[in-house]
Amino acid sequence: MSDTCYACGQDLPLPEEPPYGSVVLDSDGDAWQNRGGPDGWACIVDTAEFTNISWARLNRSFRPLKVVHLAPVGV
Image (cartoon, rainbow, N blue to C red; front, top):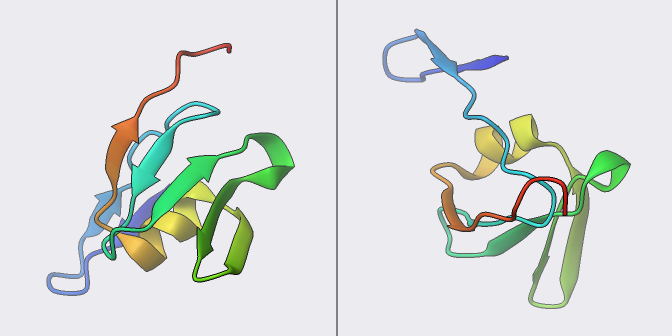
């Protein structure tokens, strides 16, 4: 899966999704945790909860993302 660069129009590869339990920071500094399976990625900002966000949507809407905790695979 890829996304398109707004500046040049070229396809950008979607980064590999970190495993279940991993945490990333978005461009606003908000933390998102991979809850796995159908629960997807979740974040709580100012008492508003965002859940069931796909990795692709998270990248399209909030990049750049920075991995701050890479969970071990299979845990």
